[in-house]
Length: 333
Image (cartoon, rainbow, N blue to C red):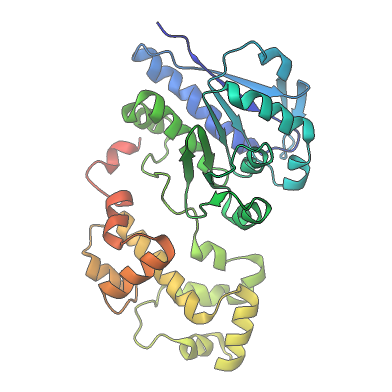
């Protein structure tokens, strides 16, 4: 019988705990499936440059093994968690060198959230497609011009390199790695055990226009955004109507809204309609023309244009990839 696949997590002080625990739980849950299927499964290890204790951003202390202890091991997968403090992470020269040494020896290398910055510093993302947390995609692109950053993806697979979006997307990434190793049935079985969705492929957008609108800087318009979500199909919905709802003159409203939310009122209406239609495509079997109208679009064609502009996919294709279907129930416990 083949030997278990060795999975090594590259740990460091200040890393995010969920970046580690999410994927780690997936590989742990894979043990039961692979045992029943007489498959080799995984051995997981926590490693760090010097070994010993490391402290996560949340204050949890973890015991790790020193990098030198893995020098003779056959490593299948190296996974790099992320951290909120990107600067400290990427200026850790020993961390980057450690990864640069082990990457060629591993079958594949993956990152969770901002861990992509470590991969980039090690030169592993040059000329490749990659993703990180949506709020850091622009910074990654500016720091590394030769990386094709994909901000609208949950995870990206390019050759032996896998990168994932923010925090919880590490679970999606790990499920995809198991799928890649042992097939979709294994990934579905593990998703059931962990009570998580298995239908979030890499191409599904990680970005929420509604969440982005509800930032600390835009609390002035929180009530307006709640009203807007319930009135997207209201006839004549425009800047003047939003201004009236906010109790401001149209001119002053347009100025303050853009300064506060970084987008025009018209663009906000479009993004909220896009969000609403995406949700309906994912969760219902309603006809697409009905979804277009209930989301406030003039017709299906207008919705199609907006989908192509923001997601590079048609509403029909989006539904076929991410929509509800008879098999959806089988992906949940």
